[in-house]
Image (cartoon, rainbow, N blue to C red; front, top):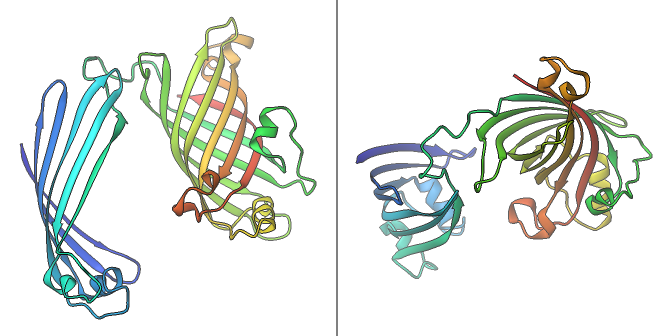
Length: 309
């Protein structure tokens, strides 16, 4: 059950640290236990920046740590998760004038989506990878207004094109026929007043298919979106609220589509879906440090073709 991890990491300013970790893994049908012992070497530049805060010069040192995590299968795809960690700070860090402790500790409790260990068949048997090509127009309305049918188009006609790849993760979730996909996307905001903007997206998407004579499928995705520059409408809205826009934002994708094979027939069209989607970037109501504690975002209404292969 034992394994060794070796890691060397650096930020863009050359502040390095390295981990040597001895880990153990024990599993049963209901629970999974992981433990580790770790030695972490931190350079003087790392300690000075992240412990000395640039106020005091700190020598290099080795921090020792230990921890354990436990997954306990509760029901279906839900497991309870607990983690506890403790670290002994290295002597150079303990000598910093405003460091008032030798040990640091943290405890985490929560729940997680996991594979259902009571199901032995592969999680993916029917779902297929897909490519989705979408073209859309920016809306100046909020997501709530768009969902209630009160969408307003952007008078400047800002447009966006996206290409998504979806990789199947599971055919079912929580015992329901919910298809789960890992998605990655690339978006291009077409230029009007300045150069075009690239958008990179990662997330998870869940689909539910309503078994009508013409199959209707509902989809919801959540993830992260990062842009090379702030889109025009998003920049105007946030600066109008005295917020500094952030390139990294939360991403939502809400979609509804129809199977073209059920409409026109044919094996090839049976793999194709035509739909409407809302491409949404937001800062999670100002609650996320990673998004800059801002409120607002942008919405793009799109039409798309999705092909499963």
